[in-house]
Image 1 (spheres, helix red, strand yellow):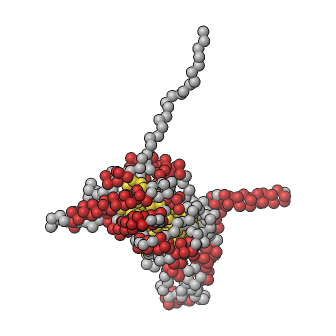
Image 2 (tube, rainbow, N blue to C red; image 1 turned 90 degrees about the vertical axis):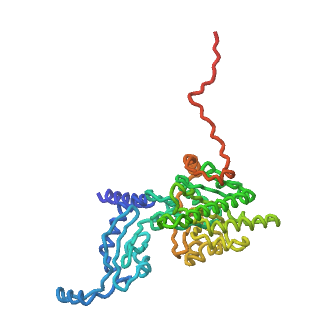
Image 3 (cartoon, rainbow, N blue to C red; image 1 turned 45 degrees about the vertical axis):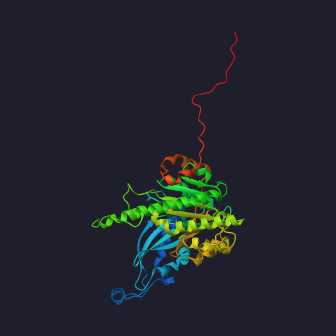
Length: 453
């Protein structure tokens, strides 16, 4: 009997370890969630006190405690709300005590993580005096599974998973232009692939510049409105985009020049204020390996380079109001590329840094907006492709990881959504050639057999 009980116990432990390593979400739901809730409820007050997150009680509370219980008055922790389980962890709201701020709670995240036995603890400010603790039960970036996709607005694409189990949404209306850096096999192409397929299902004109002969963007040619595969083609495509931007500004200015007495809501300073039937389709320009546009070998190439960089800077400075957005990708992006590189980078609000080959490259991406994230980006291991650090000009940053998406599936999505490509006459001369798929034979094909008498 003892051997049977011991064997069953060992089998249960072995099964739990297997489930924890293979199916972490199932292990969290069955084992981790009840244990963490029990730890939180049992040790909440003492943990908050040990983390220095308690304050002295008010005089009225102290008098009431002494009058009713005659026991020692203890410090008061932040008032805790309901515990809300999720598929990846827990959420609980705290009402801060007078004199506390969200930074006080954020500084104790590591202590709270160990006290309650979870993988990570993140703090988000909800409103003045209220913060939300997001407890993550397991490493959600180990095997990325995106949250259930809801309805997203135009030009907003969930492209990766944050370390707090929320989706990283690339919203061009909020962050018009972005720089994506990453070394070879870092996952930069996967990030671009997810972003392209997410936009493919929206009425957005997608334009690509891929000076590696199109090896990255050519598979999506059926959905692209324009594609340049070498610097010469890029030198012709960029002026067309600048001309399209100027035409859109003329359209906006014409709308502003309407007669006096027109309602304020009909006066606009960008394309989004135009009536829907007059609004031109938004354009997203993807530049893969931007360094290829800067490299020169002759003086003629140098003049072409200066013209292209000037046009990119103009698009970055003025394109947002015209509905033109930039996604600049490369392995390295700094002043050593040449004149205009630093000015262009300064216009790119969003930053995504995958694994890079040196710390200087991480500083180029994040050093001017989130210096504390540079060290994190510099230590991304090669065994985690798709792992990146994302930041913006607000100074905030977080870790993300892009889910795997095969090239065949991405290309198939672009073929299925090819009819959603809007009509932009200025880009018609640059539309990539897409060969027709071979016709499939209908009905069985049998080999002829001779008939003998």
